Image (cartoon, rainbow, N blue to C red):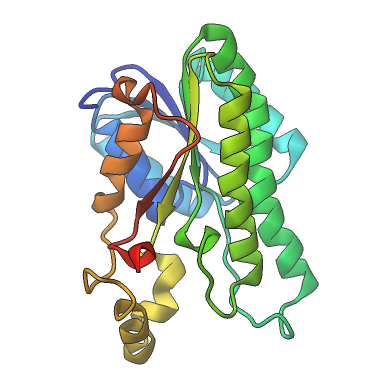
Length: 250
């Protein structure tokens, strides 16, 4: 778990937040990083931070909801690094609106990025892992895959889908040397949660649901991801690891 020397890790949605944090955690342990995002802006900052730390990292701009874009990205990563050892399906969007106010485009886009994206990336990368007899796929789900909050219908639906997609892929690739697991974060202090962080009332409303009495910090998610990607987790597949300060233990 302490070293991923020379392993090739693809992190989607690495332009900010959880994706950037996980990329940095793997880079610090010797991995070579293929960082993806749909926008070059945030990805440039991620790449600068990785390069400044001495990591080997390259950017790959692609919309993970597009089959053609995903295949082009996978070909480019394979050409640049030779193989892909670990895939972290992190890219996601999260509109906030009640079912009556939610725009249909937001529903479609959320399901496309958050659920179809991991399907496309796993389908494009997983077979190569199976052929080589080793691989790790980590899907970023959420506590909202098993609990609910008002105004999160597309996000919660997509994350519930991710949990069962994880289980199905784990069964299909069981015994191949490839494990597939889901990481289910609770509420973390990311840019996606800016409206909660900036509103004391909303912040306290969320914190009162967390037995540990605070939001998570990004470094507290890295250990779980590193474990699921490590050789030592070779008998762990089809699992959902909750990192939520106890929220789902209520």
